[in-house]
Image (cartoon, rainbow, N blue to C red; front, side, top):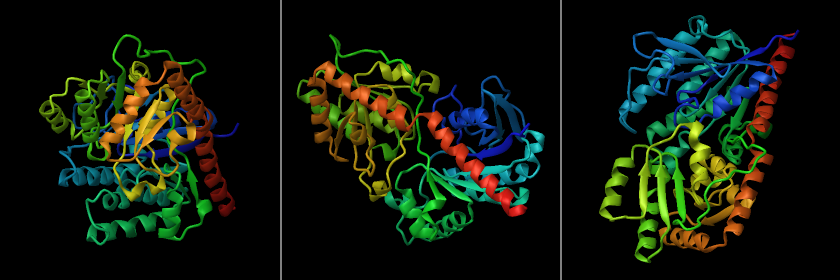
Length: 418
C-alpha cells in the first residue's frame, strides 16, 4: 500500500469555516486527503482557533483536527492595530515561531513533511518555509497570494525606490528562484514573476481561488414587492474602496430610488465608514456583522445583486484573486464589478456588469439599470456565473491541479536522489 505523502501548508492567516474570512487552504486540504495526502495546515492563533479547543494558557502551539485536516496554531502574543509596526511585529513573531517549532515537526503535532507549501500573505512565512524544506530535504512550493512588495507600490504606500521595497524585491526574487514550483492566484502573475526573477514560465502554475458549487440551483429572494437589495460581503479596508459604494448609495437615494444596500463584514475602515454613512444621512444602507463561512451561501442568496469594488491601480494588470467574487458567482446572483482588471471574471462569465473603478456615478447607474431589468434576465445572468464557477473554479478541480503540482515536485525530487 502506498504511503500518504505528507504536505505542510504554512499560512499565517489560514482560517477554518466556523469563523469569518476565506478558507482556501482548508477547502483545498480537505480534498487533498482524498488524493493521497496527509495535510497539516500551520497558522497563527491570531487567526481563529476552533471554539472546541482551549485557547487560554501559555502553550506555544495548539493542535487539532478539523474535517480530517491536521491544524497547528502557533500562539501569537503580538496583536495588530493596523498597517503599522504592530503588524510587522506580528508577522516576525509568527515567522520566528514557525522556524523554531517546525524543526521538531511542531513538537510531534505534525508528521515529517514530504513537501512544504509556503503561502505569502507576507514573504517571511515563505522564507521560513524554504528553510524548513531545506532542513527536511523536501521540495518547496511557494504560493503567491499577493505580489509583495508590488502591492505596496501599486496602492501608493511606498515608491518603487523605497529601501524596504528594494529589500523585499531581493527577497521575493530569491524565493522565486529557489522554489521548486510557484503557485499563483492571479492569472497573469506569471508575467511579473518571470520578468523579475528570470524563471521559466513553466515553473509558475495558476491555481486561483474557487467555490463549492452544488448540483441544485440556489433559491433566495428576488426583488418582488420588497426593495431591490445590493449586498457587499468582505473586508472593509482601504483596498475595497467602499467610500464609492456609499457615494453611489447617496446618489440613488437623492434620485428617489428604492434600492437598498447591505455591507456585511468587518475591517479597519468600518468605523470610519459608519461615521461617513451617518454624515451622508443614508437611509438606504445597512452595515452588518461578519458571518461564518458556513453562512455565506445563505446570506448571499437573500440579495438581488452583489457588488465588488477595486482600486484604480496598475497592479490589476496581473488579474485579481478576490475570494468574494467566486462566492458571488457560485450564489447565482448578478454581479456588479467596479474595477479594471485583466481576466475579468464577470465579463468572461457574462454574469453581470463592469464599470470603471473609482466612478460612483457609473456605479449608481449600473445598479439602477440592473434593478430595472426583468427578474428573469437577472436570473439568467446569475446562472451563467454559477455555471462558470462550476466549470473553472470548483474546489475539486483546483485540488486536482494542486495535487498534480505536489506529486510532480515529489516525484522529481525522488528521481534526483536515485
